[in-house]
Length: 178
Image 1 (cartoon, rainbow, N blue to C red):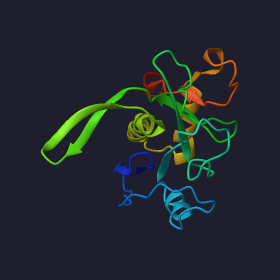
Image 2 (image 1 turned 90 degrees about the horizontal axis):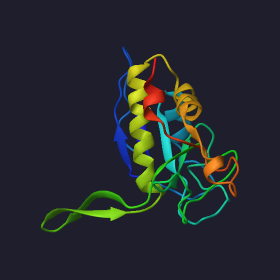
Image 3 (image 1 turned 180 degrees about the vertical axis):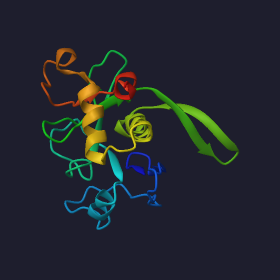
Image 4 (image 1 turned 30 degrees about the vertical axis):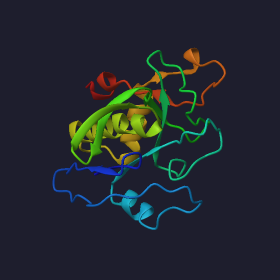
């Protein structure tokens, strides 16, 4: 199971013989984790959270909790989005988060609109984590996190004022390669 704090959605992945954990967590900026977080991680749940949109280096929670895949946003040329939070040691991954087309619920149905934010980048990473976990079912959540990071693209050359503070840009093809 992958829990995406950016959107509040849960992506189910059932390892062979494994049990999925139902439900989703909420986004919070408190300094203590939701009481369920350690238990879910112990059960093999991959937790992905948006890093925040304050252009700050200060760790944000739940993104900065250990074992969480925190996600910041970049634009179409791999440059940090002006609003995106950043930081060494707590931001793990980056994905497109500027002008992302998404559905918007309205009273007459559903419309489409372009939105920007680390919450728009987070679904790229949660979806990638679910695909990696499905393709490599013996990986632990920490190994999925490490695989996404180590197969990603170093963003420091594109962002010299943020050395090692933006995580790695998702490279899904590399993450899924045998």
